[in-house]
Image (tube, rainbow, N blue to C red):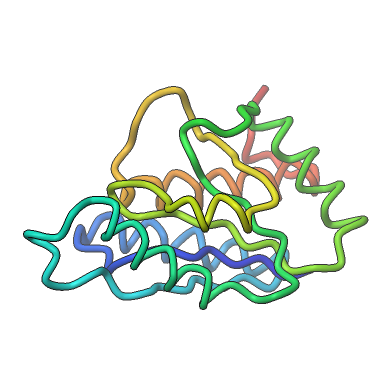
Length: 157
């Protein structure tokens, strides 16, 4: 199975870049994993919020594969603890033939069109995090899920 993380805009904080790189390399021990970065919307200072989300949404849709199983990382999504997420991921690995594409939107969230093409929404927490911080939190949780699936000692219940 293949897994990809689609994110919008460059990661500007070096500690986030370093952390995501660390966990990405660890995840690749378990499955094919890639990070896809689409460019941030430019010249958006005076652009209405809806227009920003729509433009970003078009880029997300263009970057998604036609057969991808699309999971939006969204504060209104389903909530799972880490073990539940590992169980969900393990089931996907057994039965899912499509690439799983996890998507992190920009600072304003997703357009309506992106919600329409998604297969699932997943929340990392009831708390709100910056879209850049979500990159690191998600990468760590994905790695942790794989260690649970493999019975490795990284996670402690």
